[in-house]
Image 1 (tube, one colour):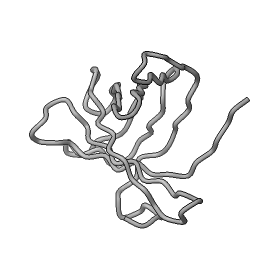
Image 2 (image 1 turned 90 degrees about the vertical axis):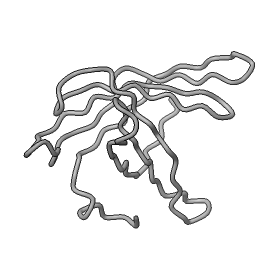
Image 3 (image 1 turned 45 degrees about the horizontal axis):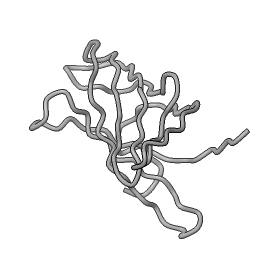
Length: 121
């Protein structure tokens, strides 16, 4: 079984210019370079309520990948204060030749205020 556990954090923010898109910046520590690296991860909102919704992610580059996440939280005056994020189902990778690979992916975490994130920004 191919299994990897990675410590990372995902910074989420609404893009006022793109309705229905939750902008994500994935930050994770690269043990080979001993540095934090980041990637853009735009989450397309599928539906739900402001504090309990599903998003679809598709990242295009040398290969295309995608998966679905569930975000559930508690809002205070329209601002989400805490909650959870987790993937639903699996993922897929497709290269430029059209070869596809799919499998199970588990991403889970707790939503916390940015000031409480215990890693460099």
